[in-house]
Length: 164
Image (cartoon, rainbow, N blue to C red; front, side, top):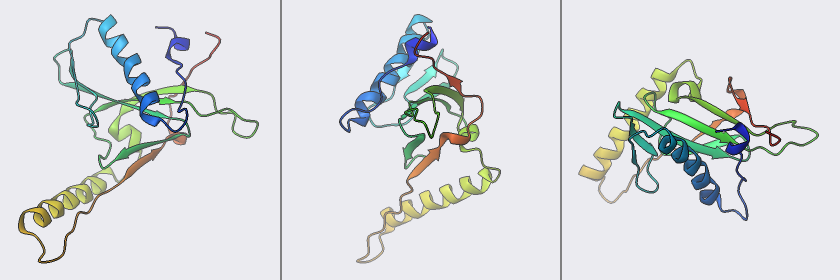
């Protein structure tokens, strides 16, 4: 697929899921063209494409118009391969061009203390389970992270030229 074929329009009229679905459709098109086996995740679940080629490879597709992707309550996982479509608008100030990035969850996070982050994530998940199973008297607790990634510092981005 030509790089220009990966250009899709960004969010229009606040419909972020519609443009995200277009990015997923591009990945699906490539997987189908390569005749690779995969299963698709149900709506609103991470790991959009699962067990690709029957080798256990999972892909998560992300899209952003502003250079920040939202992962909601799922921390980018080390065993998931991410494809990130970045459609920042190029302005006189920013000079950003549309690009695509490929890498693992660890590369996406890009933090030297990833193991500490994983430990905090596991502790939060355990707190959720305890609060849900045992309750806290009259108190309800549902701690939830909202993970997001600033993609400005990602290395290895491939620019997408609309002229190609």
